[in-house]
Image 1 (tube, helix red, strand yellow):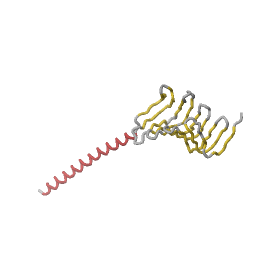
Image 2: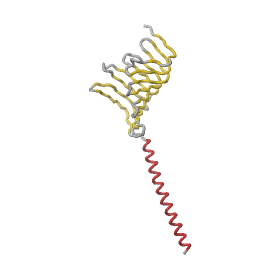
Image 3: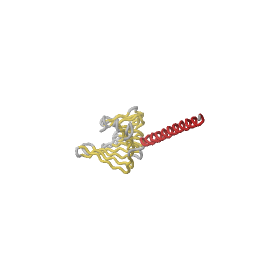
Image 4: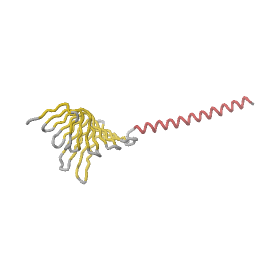
Length: 184
């Protein structure tokens, strides 16, 4: 009788442990799956051509071969891993162009991070060349600490860092390392 009770007790313990282990495995699998899903993008768009208007006036046109939407993250963002071509129109309908090999738009901070052979050409043909440039959409401010070349009609300036308002009326190269004056 004692042997049978011991065997029954052992069997019950083994069954309970087995049930607990299988239950934990199912929860672990669910947790791993939900964790994997949170790292996947919400959507991927290809060959986008987005036009933005304000009060019926075209203000910008964004063209990119790929956009990945990570708005499901705790710090949401959109990634353009294959580059962007952005045309910005001012109130007189003059164009400024921005080209970069990649870009990331951060939703919470309204910050745009442009990287890789960034070229910004204003409507007055002032041109900025750098490998990285940030644009703060709230403050309408451009900035970087990376090396830059800034070309205007009068000079070419090299330096480390750049600050400018959106329309370049207050543009400056920081830590100037060289300047060449252009004579016509």
